[in-house]
Length: 141
Image (cartoon, rainbow, N blue to C red):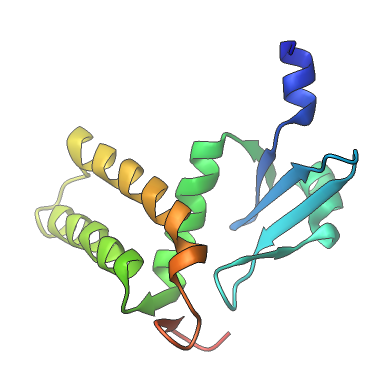
């Protein structure tokens, strides 16, 4: 497969405002647009955000890693829970709290821990988290 073919067939990632949006190519040539839902923290159909990805001033195409980091930052900010994902979020919150208390930015090693942990939580969130059962939104939407 050529690089140009691979690029046309691969998922595209965007940040529109604070919301993460992804374009997932379908085998039939179609496109599925998914956006982060502020109420559940899950990805829901977001075809209404298609034009925003292309034309909004606050839209940016990003790497998969930037997409994951933004998605997980939003989930950490808006949700709380009692499962493995939120235990890992607690670790990340402790790193942030310690750095802030010491009046310093995260170290290179701490940033690496955040990145690796958020990749893990991103992969786990939809399979582990059940809204109302083991996680909830911190504040009403």
